[in-house]
Image (cartoon, rainbow, N blue to C red; front, side, top):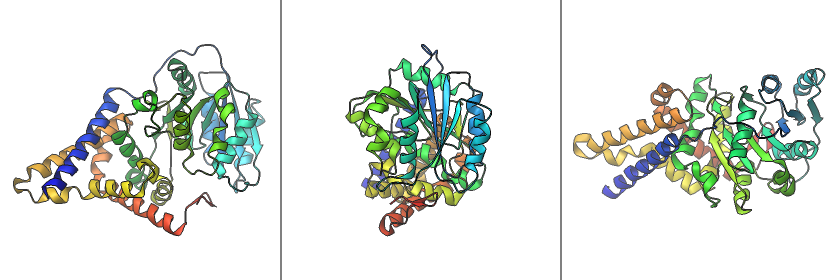
Length: 363
């Protein structure tokens, strides 16, 4: 029992140190001045996004950085996504709509959409951004300056998450809880090791010359976690990337409710753990039931240390990711149960090959 307790406490200490490092080193998108006036192609894959796409288009139109074009790929939507976009194209010549094509064999939908968008983009920089994202006025300007400052080939940002429902508050923060406690984000830039790769497909900015040379979305055309795979590929090519957190420049409502979030995370949660179902399950068990071996120590000292450490970890992650601290503390047990449920759900989907997203199989 002692060695199990030691593993539980050591793992917590490591995660807490990693999270503190991410907070203290301020791994946020920072302000800066753009050199020159590179054209930014804002590329938006959209499938059934009629309720979201308008807000994103308006937010891009209000950017402080003026040198951009927008191209939306309507991926055979079953709602009026195309009609919403056409309303903007008629008023702003910088906005274009691409009508989607049937999905070829061997491709996943988003990867195919992004590949098609890049093939017609004219920009010096290619910004792939999801339709459920909202960009605040300084986003593009600061992202371009950040990419230039560090001489990057790729910059990815984890947006601040908007979570209006209880189900989302229980599930969505787990993404940052995993990311910020297991990966020092600075290593995404400084280490050539592909293991230190993280990216968020909600916002990825590429140097267009580099992207066109390698056609990254074609390279990962059948990969359902294309963002992380692209970053790993980037590192193997000895190119330079960096993943940071939003500091109020970009926000996203990632999922609409508990079931949507569980389904969404279940399709990619193993990739947060080296694509290993075993590692994912071990982390879920240790973080959920870590109190059990500590319970038997008299006086409750080590149990109290574990509880305090877990709560402090959630506070640090919430501050770093610009989330509500109180919700993270109050909902801790439910979030932990949801994490275990997601991992088990990913196991079920892997065994029975039932993974779907937006009406398409992604097995």
